[in-house]
Image (cartoon, rainbow, N blue to C red; front, side):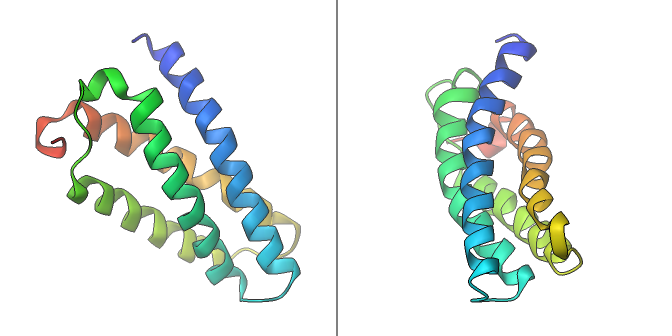
Length: 123
């Protein structure tokens, strides 16, 4: 698949995942249910579940060639994102909080592109 087409698909799924992330994050912060770092982590987990499934089914389907990512691959992707989400979420406050929802896109495309093309990360 041409890179521009892959990026377009990734972007479409990512926009939905980002919207999910931002909505959950803002709800948790506005309702003052949890600290911002934890709220960002919870919001990420919700968006991650949606994104991981949709990116495998839509964006990287051709690179996976009928396979799916191994649990190890998803765990690495998840844990990397969790560390980034919590770490940045603990440092960012005020009106910049919503920008935290954009960070997983950069991490996810890079890792998903690598994992989906490497046989050691597919099953």
